[in-house]
Image (tube, rainbow, N blue to C red):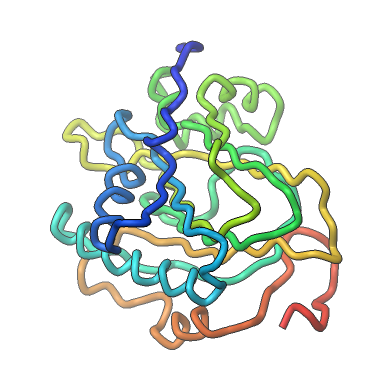
Length: 252
């Protein structure tokens, strides 16, 4: 197995789209995230600065998803559909993992500025599995990175996102797929993600606007309604996730 993978250059995974339109940005995000071979990282980060605001961030996320759907329809003849969306205060560290979802999907996560410091790491488990002669699903079954031996196997394939900032509004797109490599290079090749929270503090907020987006045949009935999308765009509610604690008055 390769243990000398070169790190992805900063400009391959980090974007500051000061002069890019949403359609132009979507082209770059689609290429880097919805990869069908290992020449792209399978993830990218968009730094939108410190002044956008939460609702501006969410509006940008929805607009970007719509442009990505247009690209996907042209590229694959399928479209993109929300599987889930929500807003969470998440302050638990994680091991490398794939979020539950369809075999071909990606996460679009909108991070808001926070005083709770954290790091984000992406592991190319599809590449690791490929070099072992395994499918991604088989790799996870045989070498679960929730356990130390599987975690250690992935370390040579892990990238700590160098431009992840707690000071800015950011969108991070992460290929969350589990399908194997295809001979015609048509299927998405997934990654795992890991968050490390340095000093959790329940008196503060670490807000993630979380959406899971799947590739689906055209005409499939939406799982998430337009009313749900509008609620996501307008709500002030922040749900607590992955740590003990009741909703507090400033969560609303």
